[in-house]
Amino acid sequence: MTRIRDVVQKALVTGYLTVEAENQLRKLLATQYDLEDLNAFMTLQEAAMMGRVKQESRERCGI
Image (cartoon, rainbow, N blue to C red; front, side):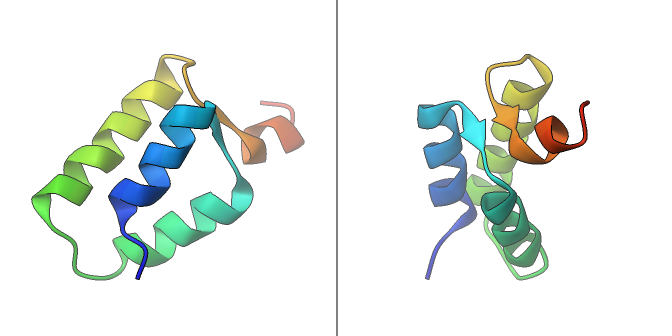
């Protein structure tokens, strides 16, 4: 099973978060996860805010 940290790692390496990955994160966040996954998600949020990771969903709607 995929973990939050796996999805985050891919986004951090590529600098891009796809819509598919966002949907996968939503599903994973609705389940039980550990502190390492939570920390990874917070790292992804920070990277997105700082512009180090672009979000496909925001590009589609022009944000």
